[in-house]
Amino acid sequence: MYTQGLDSLGKDCLRDPARDEGALERAFQARVDAEEKIEPKDWMPEAYRRTLIRQISQHAHSEIVGMLPEGNWITRAPTLLRKAILIAKVQDEGGHGAYLYSAAETLGVSRAELIDQLLEGKAKYSSIFNYPTPTWADVGAIGWLVDGAAIMNQIPLCRCSYGPYARAMVRICKEESFHQRQGYEIMLRLSRGTTAQREMAQAALDRWWWPSLMMFGPSDADSKHSAQSMRWKIKRFSNDELRQKFVDFTVPQADFLGLKVPDPMLRWDEVTQHYRFGAIDWSEFEQVLQGHGPCNRERLEARRHAHEEGRWVREAAVAWAAKQAARAGREEAA
Amino acid sequence: MTDERRDWPLYEIFIRARSGLDHKHVGSLHATDARMAIEHARDLYTRRLEGVSIWAVRSSDIVASDPGDADALFEPARDKVYRHPTFYDIPDEVKTL
Image 1 (spheres, rainbow over the protein chains, first blue to last red):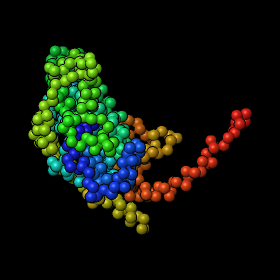
Image 2 (tube, rainbow over the protein chains, first blue to last red):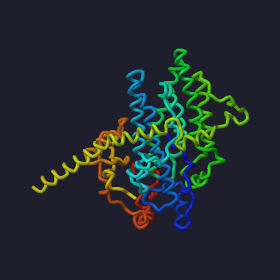
Image 3 (cartoon, chains in turn cyan, purple):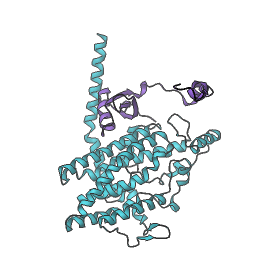
Image 4 (cartoon, chains in turn purple, brown):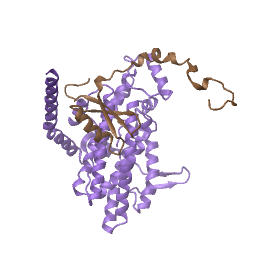
């Protein structure tokens, strides 16, 4: 669902000439330039491998943590149908996390290691999930805006140079459209409802608009590692390009709802044929990314709690499998 | 880096989308045994009627060719264009050939 922080990859993105042999690296780059896919057993620069492990695992963690803000509403959805839809959506997010962990594992990292990094608070995930969902309209706004921003980010990743990541993204993007449409439909119902419902929808848009724009990551001017990611064809468009596209798509959708985008600077620019929008408060983004958002602690605690509560189930499953295998072995021997 | 003692065995999952089609590789998952692999594959890969049949194979049981051998394995087929029907020029007058 929600890849982000593509530019906070740290020094992993930088090339490491000591480890990469020139000829191999040139051949690798030629394959990437020719739009060939790189597969797990192919030679690849160590920095490419590390960049992908970092990006794919952050993406997977985001899917898993992303289940929490919406999961809060499963027991409180307004109708049985909305409840069934929300369960299906949250289940999709779990599935997306699983596809992505599998893709990361093809690069030689274990799932257990990645999950440890998340639970120990060492791994990043999308900052958007550290915001609370106080009303039902937040579920609508998340589907419409957060999943909408995610789709914008993820469609180019379907053409990523690394085969397993690209294939996981194709599967994810197919499922993502349902998420966005069900969210918009919730907003549509509320915005055509009572005054209280309209206000609830507007308040949710006010809460989620700016964090959604931040999902595209830092501005191009501040994004240190974009160029290398572009050269490797992991990334296809710059953060600002994607953000602009998202604003251009989304503002008319908000107009249709009769809701107001919370940006006094927002206006249509006839010359560029784009919406101009106000400056983003990057200090908020940094704060949330560093762990000081409204729900960072709560989210990680929920994940740790789930992991601990599930421990006996995992242990029982292993014990059962061992017992069955032993029994099968005895029968074969007899 | 792999931590096989803590991760459950990895299974590759193949799905037959409709009767009459081949099973196609769709991805992988971890499971304690084959039965769990099938159950998880159902939840993970067939939430939208994507399949009518599932195969699960332990990843460690798959034998794969080495990308380094690709030239030796596949290059010899490159210059054998006469294996394709379009190699042969047949006059248009000749029908059903």
